[in-house]
Amino acid sequence: MKVLVLNCGSSSLKYQFLDMENEEVLAKGLVERIGFEGSCLTHKRPNADKYYVETPMENHEVAVKLVMDALMDSEHGVIKDVSEIYAVGHRVVHGGSKFADSVVVDEDVKASIRECFDLGPLHNPANLMGIEACEAAMPGVPNVAVFDTAFGMGMSEEAFLYAVPYEYYEKYQLRRYGFHGTSHKYVSGRTIEFGELPEGHRKVIVCHLGNGASISASIDGKCVETSMGLTPLEGLVMGTRSGNVDPAVVQFIAHHENMNVDEVLNVLNKKSGVLGISGISNDFRDIEMAEAEGNARAKMANDVFHHSVIKTIGGYAAIMNGVDAIAFTAGVGENGPETRERVCASLGYLGVEIDKEKNKVRGVERLISTEDSKVKVFIIPTNEELAIARETLALVK
Ligand code: AMP
Image (tube, rainbow, N blue to C red; front, side, top):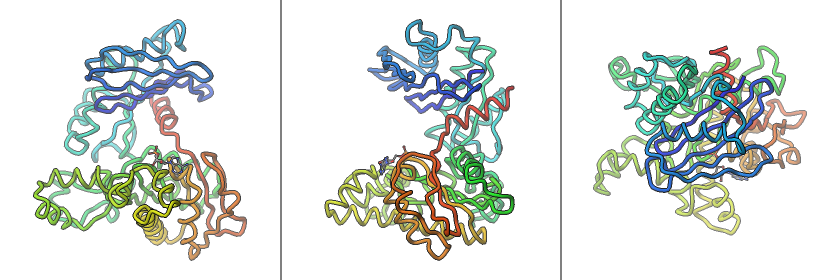
């Protein structure tokens, strides 16, 4: 059974095509500049040359057709016929308070995704376009929506409610949702499995540290806390996002810089974080390199980032009254031994002790804490595409 996984942005489309018999990736690729001049598709198969097509694509429907052509191409393809596509799994960013789980798409689901446009204005319209493009291009093939917010729906009211007039929650479902849910669910589950955590010892903190960064706390795989909020802006300091700020900062910047609220939010989303503090880059590799060369603002940016991670882990350990395992994942979490070491160095009070030699790796699944460490610490590479493919198959099988 072969499953296509799609992650649609407003002008891009990432895909992976997996054989679920052995969970092998048969092909993957990226379509860029949909609706713009110079639109192109890059298609890759393991151990084969890249296949690159540059052709006009006015919308997602054309893009999806091109993906199918690539998958069925006589030279670069991996299937002969559309009937070999068993189902399509779509990453949908915002499910509002309706979806605590993945669902098979029907007209009602599409209407609900549309209702969430104001909650996820940058992503949900593109996600829906991707679904509709697949319906048109592959009639009869089931589509499954896998929501980034679903994992956070496990939180209880004390964790998800903002202390603003309750009527806003009742009227607009204004609450903390959390994002990167597919990754947090996959990594927390994998931590329990890989770490062989016994029942009653499954308090897990997952640090998803990439350009976007978030932390979750879960017990037995059920989310109890997560750092992103109504939007992905809340929580940790990130590549370009500020994370938590006093809300009055918005008014202060607006007054002093003569901006409206949307413009200030654009600054907080796109020009802040380690980019904003360092003035150098949103890429943590650049920040680390500049810090090593003695750049004071790069050091400051990195320090503020680590501070926010350490503070959040401590808060979540307190909320769960303990922690059994901490897992690092995503770009920096998987590939940044320095970040893992610096964060863990401040968690000695929890009984965290990492083995510096074991920590000197990038991108592998591994236990990196010492035998004596009271809390097990892991690197668990995330795999959102595989998680989406599994959820998809489970629903349509
Ligand atoms: P992601 O959003 O998960 O793709 O992660 C992207 C971030 O991971 C970027 O800021 C990268 O600089 C960072 N990253 C990737 N490799 C490394 C590395 N070897 N050391 C530090 N950061 C890294």
